[in-house]
Amino acid sequence: MATEPIDVELAGTCVGPDGSAIGMPQLCFDWWGNQIFWLVAALVAIFLILSRIALPRIAAVLAERQGTITNDIAAAEDLKAKAVDAEAAYDQALIDARSEAARIVAEAKADIQADLDIAIEKADAEISAKSAESEKAISEIRAGAVDSVKAVAKDTAKEIVAALGGTADAKTITAAVTARMKG
Image 1 (cartoon, rainbow, N blue to C red):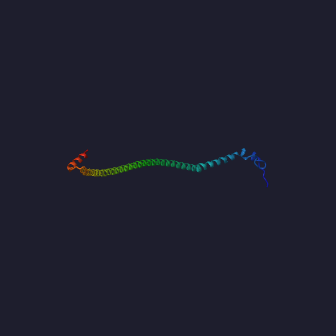
Image 2: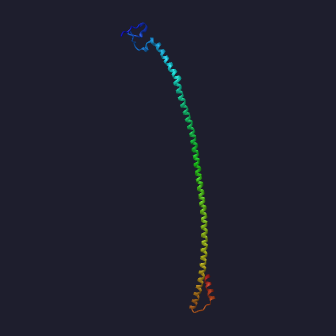
């Protein structure tokens, strides 16, 4: 393989006599113009790609995310308000249920007390009737007992007077027994 000699004047100081680069080509001042051109061209291409394609897509995604987050926060606020309203309604329903239960209990107590009062009055009436009946029976028994005692006393007095050898008439014996029974 034959190598052609490189014109050193055209290549500048960055190329050796055999055509190879001396040192790092990026640091060769003779080639900077070409490198700067391609650097600017690459940066412009990257800028155009980013500004026309990538950044609008990223901005759209960020805007969509922000919209979703805003909507979710608004929905959460609505749900929180509904939860507060539901809790208030539940508390009110609980209060109403307790007051209704207390009212039902009070009505039941009143009904039971009324039934009890009626039953007590009925029992008192029955007891009074039976007591009056018993008093009547007792007074009849007492009256009968007093009459029986009088009759026995008269008979006994008559027999005692006869046993002692005396005679007594029925009127005298009745008057004596009646006087003794009175006290």
